Image (cartoon, rainbow, N blue to C red; front, side):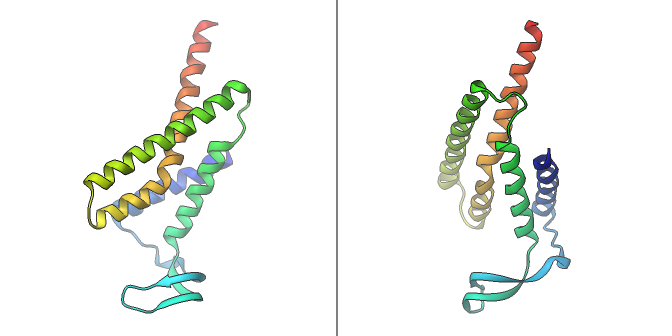
Length: 146
């Protein structure tokens, strides 16, 4: 439940930012950076920089919520759920890399950078969707048999 509470707002905010280009200027902070390479500036190693951390916070919350949702124990955790979890993870990795191969073949320029950013999250998204869909489908089948 905590994972969903974290994941859903992170998904909504990431969609809003992607579609509108909204930047929350109140999330400017001084942060420690191992490496910083500004477009028209100098390269900095192990320094403190002033930057907008909106995308950092949303990405962090998205991954944290996604991991909590993906790998939380189910109420009836058994061998079937473990097998389903593994097969969903393998399926999600395969589909994610297939999408990445298509992107390498057909997406160019700065749009490719966006594809690479979204690709960081596709394994979690596909896993959560497939795992919960199969659980839902199987719960309907079991309830129909009773």
